[in-house]
Image (tube, rainbow, N blue to C red; front, side, top):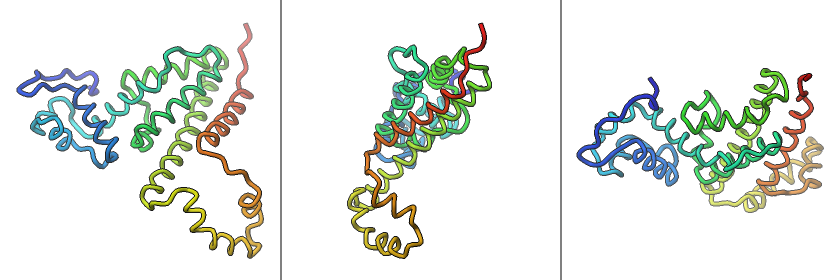
Length: 230
């Protein structure tokens, strides 16, 4: 029985339910990452005994599942775009935006499918965008490919943000600090392709990088989609 199927116990003596528990856990994670979340800390925030939480949630993994599902409600657009490409693009960008608001989400993206109501709704919206454009196996591979791209891109972006905070150096500051070493290594002539990228490449922001990569992935998906004969 999943956490969504299991009934909740009576709310006593402090009013308590899964919605309050998940909201408190999300707040803790937003403040300090997943390492800041435990049933004991959530109970303390709710002014409840830790053992009471086990009536609602059996494990920390269940709590994480509920947290992810709560945030996935932010990913669903108000209306599903009619064009498949726009629909997948909107879902990818909204996933990135949610991860930037809740950085811990990057640590829990991917893996086994989310089974909560919001997670299932996101999966339904993703599959529905491609429904009828190709056979089911092609649609599944397309969805997996797009998901693999934005999951990896989001994790990399979040990792860079965390590195900035941990070191106190912005991207530009880090480049300046490492510049002498990089210049010395490139001067050896051993890395010509890298030197070309460093000296001739255009520096763009994370959002532009994400959007460009997503467009290229969607181009590849478009090449594989063929409408079945009527």
